[in-house]
Image 1 (spheres, helix red, strand yellow):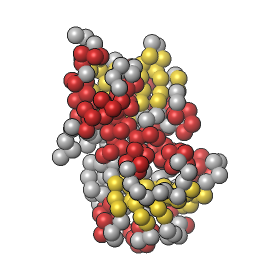
Image 2 (cartoon, one colour):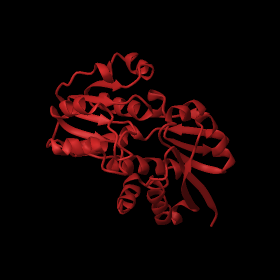
Image 3 (cartoon, helix red, strand yellow):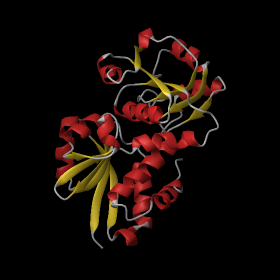
Length: 270
């Protein structure tokens, strides 16, 4: 049986559970696919080298995570589906001679929220990168009023152009929210917070759900929310949902989504 190589680009990336999820699915569905897939992490130093590295490694497909999702959009030969709307790509598939970009974060992000009995009417998104674009698009598609806060002004321009209320971190005033989402990498080190501590405490004290896209550690953001009695979600459910959607692109739809999802659910995160 022939082999095909896949991977995930990011920095940092050693913590990623994506290889465990995808390699499990490649083993489970090898017969249906007709090839043996191998998936690994790839730490990239410069985003400009993303496409060249993909080609150099002879990959058939890849996932792209922080901080390279927006440059992956720019470097795609073709973009399809949700990626066009948010100008961020988290999945690449080599289709013929074209590197085709997709985004599975939008559907993956909302999957855990569907299971909660709390309507999301208003939300605050912390961060303004490629993941934030997917989160904002997903929340707005489900009817939520969304605000965005970021430490620097430049990346907020894309959200302001959509008519969203945007704030610099230093300008944000605590208000009640159904949902606060951390889309930044703050907390991956187990120490840092996405906002100044007193501000975040006051904010979470008026929040119903705190959602951190990080899944590799219990972040200080979520620890603070739990201490305040706020319902919390980490990025595990989102990771599995978006990974199953990505795998569907890797296998050109030859395996149903739910079968992929159930296969990946069996992977331990401990």
